[in-house]
Length: 245
Image 1 (cartoon, rainbow, N blue to C red):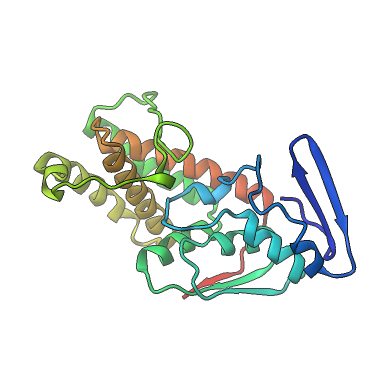
Image 2: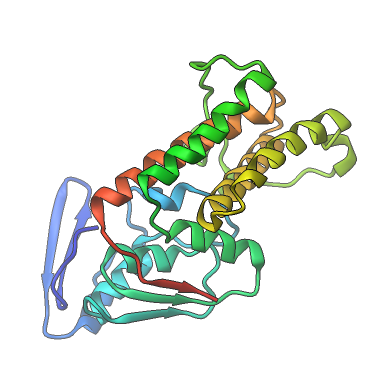
């Protein structure tokens, strides 16, 4: 969503662009189509990891634009997976997020941390090292199931099942191998967190889609996608001032 002046709003409705200019941001709230029909809700680091009951990024984006200015600090006391924090970062605000869920904090930190290219290259090198272990060709990319397309986790009904039926000894051995390679990144907290989030997201997608063609190909593709996103983020912004507690 484009950065706007404090009391101005542009909204896409179908093929029309509607522009509002008022003397008060409060008056704009009644004009907004809060469904944000037709807008892309999954972009940049918002795509890193699914999370229950999160709202679309256009909602915090709208409030941040209307009620804060660049350089202000945005507080989200129930930050969840960091949707508000990401939007504050993209709009050149400082942000503080608080959550009691360790996974939520891990995801939020990863989504709001800029990563240097040489570090991204190191992460990819670690992932490529595993290819020979799992017998994967270098060009053997797989379709990564996300909210868009084959696997939709926004309306998921969890089946009744035994966790031991899913995490068989073979599956555990595969995950253990991936985790052992990730451990090589422990000297770099940012890369280690990034790899953990990629693995967590991969496990969720593979298990919930009941796709049994191995975790490593999906993990490799997930990391590849995350690296591409972070490279794009580096081109868009030059600093992130986000604190996750």
